[in-house]
Length: 417
Figure (cartoon, rainbow, N blue to C red):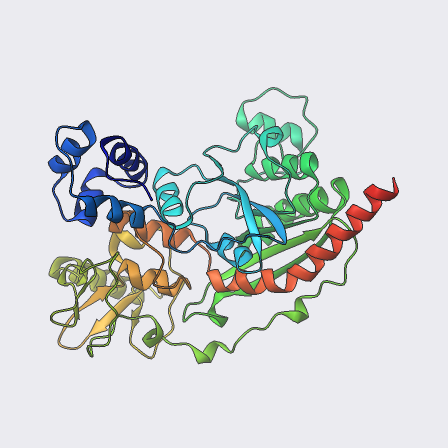
């Protein structure tokens, strides 16, 4: 453990300030920002307990570390690590991460640590990626067509590339798969990837994975509603470098009806757990109520009601989504921070409220050990962009025996050669 010497504290503070804003770190330590600045400059020395508190803050909160991992994986377009958690639970070790958003990177490193290479932009970095057994990637869907030249035209780039995925983020995944040839991969995207550009986008991706790279590929749309009270469909693309007996029939999907919002909402009956990393930020434990700041203002509530009435009159279905303890929700989006309209929690005798960031974390399947070190706005964006974590824990579970078998096959082939 680091001693509370001047150099030790400075090193700890350097690490902490890479993960937290000064104001956030000050709040976590129960001091003000100026005190943090004086400690960091060496002007004053903190009490010994500060070193212990910093150690705790710098200890990853949800990471599962294995002494002898069964396989390694890389986490691309990692977000806040929703896919990673599932593969750590089945004895996998992450050896490389890429995520360009600084706020997401902060949440990721607070929860998983920073003991391996973590880069921002993955573009053009295929030769820098270490060898691994499984590639994970929740890649953004950028439009591209079947014609490589027309794609180059649309981007104002020179001709000469025949690869129709060039210029898209999927191309970076393809290049890494080509360069490293891992035994398996898992990719995730929105359900509409299949229908984008009249199906051409999905066709190009399948051709690249199956025909160009030679992977056995399996795809399935899975609704996160099997694990949480939220309708959230995503396409999962799984691939193996050798033939397998992998089957989606092995998925164990709970009945959607077994989940309701009561599973994830703050409890106002006095049983809401106190989380040291949340404190009273979202929930007033003394009065057993959600903090008032999450209740809609009169002006916003009036606007949303008028907006919904206008569209009902026009025969449209647009409007807010009002939910209760017994409800299931629409898909949580990255724009939730704007007005919360897709999921508004009814409150007896009061205007409805937004979900708190902690409730959003639960709605995405993250347990309460997951730390939220960013502002409410950034937290809403992060959870709205994330995956339903238990979906990928289940996919990881059924992938593992095939990952291990393909690893053995490749090893045997290398020995025979």
